[in-house]
Length: 520
Image (cartoon, rainbow, N blue to C red; front, side, top):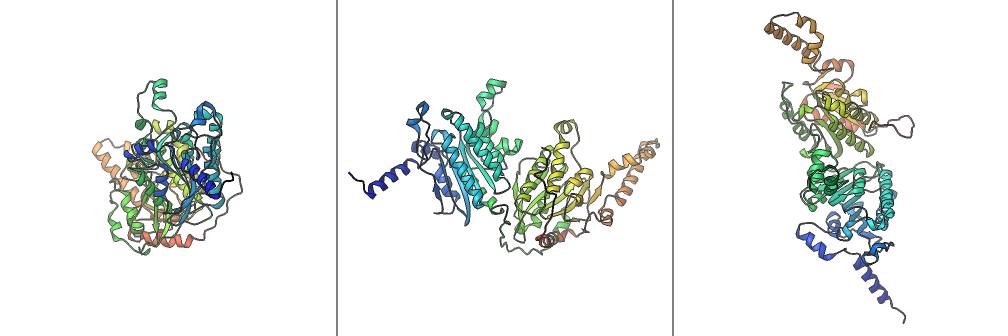
């Protein structure tokens, strides 16, 4: 009997119904715990009615080890495209209710195809990760699938923004695709990432640890730095994605979107004169400086809980996206160490790849001393900052707020490392080292010759005051042209805005090469 179109459409409907969700009962139980299913996540992420699914009828061809009874159309991952605030994005969401979201051959091919499409049209990719790892029954085919995804993550790096949201388990090989992407967002209590799980850790090294202690959101946003942001719920994580994307261009050939903020770019702020203590040894919160300079005080911080001695994040000045790197005197005096160097370098390179101007606020006493830092490779890690700033060709504006000592002064985007415009506040101290240390070196013999301790300390203080007056100020650097002007702190915002406007047409030629060899 010949089938009618109605018959064919009914058959199609049944196939797509099978691909809708892996296990509805399992999805129901997860929802009771506040966990959205894969399709709900996509619906909440994208503008209503904009999602277009692709390859929903993919079906695993491997039928070994009982897979013929388990396999379903869609193969445990939903892929497609839609819009966020009217802008095109590509998204995939792993379905943990289908075989634990495990990655098999066709599951991987769907993600790889999505990445290929995103690169062709130049639009961001968002991965909603919820997977127990490779599908063991598919063996080498699953491993090959991971390799294909990793390869495309690397090809897409610096071409389109890639955002990974960890919304459940991400174990074994599953962790490396997020690690290769630009930003990782984790959900508290329900997500975790690790190479080897608690059972293996216990068996191999005898350490008792649970999923969250080993690889939860706190572990990766505070200790390892693998994750950039954490959210209290699935919904909050998806909102963070939307906010992050609002600062980013679609691809490396576009400028970031302009947003009318209603904040006058020429606005001055006299209160900035009172934010920084005149005593160079008294800490303050650099966030206050940032908030007073950027549009409407809105600063979207990245890695807020890791390496707190340096601050990185996105903001706007005059409606234009900027990336901010700033020392934090309120934490470890704003010193540069291994983690803060890595944090800043990664952020600088992202901004440079996606045409986001870089603003640097400097108050740095130096690099962290000690055997732990030296043996951990502070030389190599600190060199990453030198490399990242020197390599960056986007507009770079530096404002020296207070301390700028030694190699750390250079590492915080000095003019010698390619800063286009460098301003300094009157409180700036630019020198090889702080006055106290300098005096102990320069006047060592004179001080040693004074026997009376009180008299020696009095003389030492005189030397310190003399050194500070002569060298620990911005004027010697201004005389040599290392800074472009010493400015009233109240005028910081308009000065930066005018510099960025001037630099919008910046073009910079570099020697032709395949790529440099960054110290990693």
